[in-house]
Amino acid sequence: MLPEFIQGVALSTEDLGTEHANTGPTDTGPTDTGPTDTAEQHPVSAPEPAVARRPPALRRDARRNRELLTTAAREAFAEQGLDAPLDEIARRAGVGNATLYRHFPNRAALIEAVFRDSLAETLRAGELARETEDAWAGLTGYLDTVFAGLAADRGTTDLMTTAIQGVASLEALHVSNRETVDLLLGRARRQGTVRGDVTTEDLLFSLAALGRAVPALAATAPASWRRYLALFLDGLRAGAAGPALPAPPLTPDELGGVLRELGPNSAR
Image (cartoon, rainbow, N blue to C red):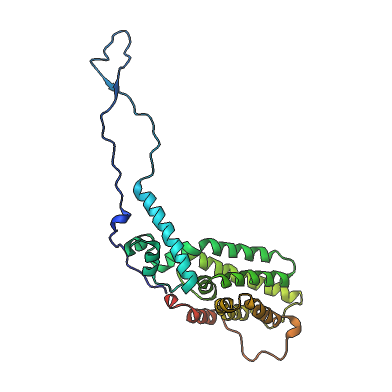
């Protein structure tokens, strides 16, 4: 589980703003009371015209600080993975730790904010792959998209190759990813393009293990991960089957345990 960070920290002065109400004199005007003119005796306040008010200073500052924090976190996670220190992220953003905790009470909340959009794009890629009539083309195209994301930064690698709790969009993607792989693998078996003894857990574990190496591969030889993904996929083809595999496949629970062990310290 991810560590919980300090809740309810007193806000720094940079988070606070004060809206000063306009307490100037109230305009008055005459009131038409018919034939008898009593406007001078009974003045009535005229309604103030509707004026568009600016957003409170607190809202503007809070929105700016949130954007600074998510930008700084995205950069730090890309460089260091999801274990990047939160105090360093606050420093990069130019805000205090209390400001970070106010917006993101724990690491999972910050991860959710940083990666929500990219995870949604990967989920959509899986949905498109399911619609591909040629299951092998759909599977290999989807995995190429996923691995391109892993090569982009270490934070994405941590997300996609480990089990991290408390990130709603990631949990939704893991469910969708399993469904996509399971559907395409089953369809490919029926089409005779993949060996019959490969399970969904076999594929997910192998992809996670290979995926953990992608950032190092990309840093050394940027396109080299494509070679190793292709070698792995070739081993799945129906014609590549040799003797029976030497051990039973992982169960879903066993796979989850392995992925937690592979993950960053913050995920344990």
